Image (cartoon, rainbow, N blue to C red; front, side, top):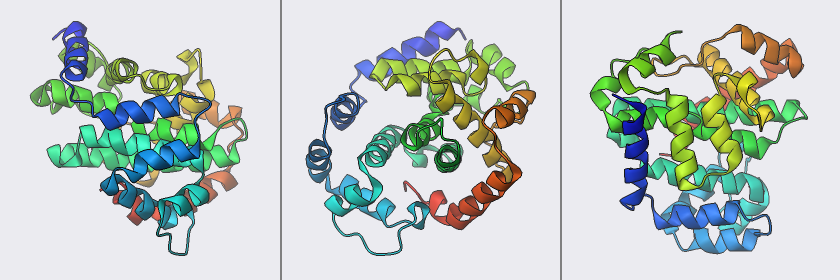
Length: 274
């Protein structure tokens, strides 16, 4: 298979209106620097199912809330506009590729949710990064793997999450899941930082832009493999991760803090977007 076939699938997938109208509206708000919480509130309010999920997430211990949030307005006030934007966008993309497609896809989404959570916590302790950017970057970093599954699930099942995974993907699909993910993100009009994260999360040093978000996502994925290993995860620790630990001054104390936060929220993360 050639990379052009994967690119063609992405364009065809988008052209067939498989992408919901809601996603287009959310993206227009996300990319508009002058957009407001009121605009997002009105959009969410017109989708009762999405509104219910947002409220459930806001009540999650994953976000440190111990009370009962019952209204969308409360959710936005508690989580903040930026975090709500990230969650809504992530949920809508997930709806395009539902977990029920296969066991692997469910585990891939769970892995992505874990990476998003860890990236968000990491960004809180590394002042050079933004929690809202890192959360969404973590959530969508492996979207390319789901694209490859959709292109040819039989070939996808031949790939093993080992150190030579990029070589396996190139042999079977003519491209890596990083490339496939960036093509998808670009095609549907994702924010530039998401395009960069999907493209370089296994090679942060190659990222020309948004290197902080890419690097934190890369570290979060490697941490997720240590804290919650899965057959489907591919966060193999390399020398580049050691360099990132030094660059971002991630101490053993920070790692213990991240681990404690993660295990405290792990059960809810696993059901995050169901």
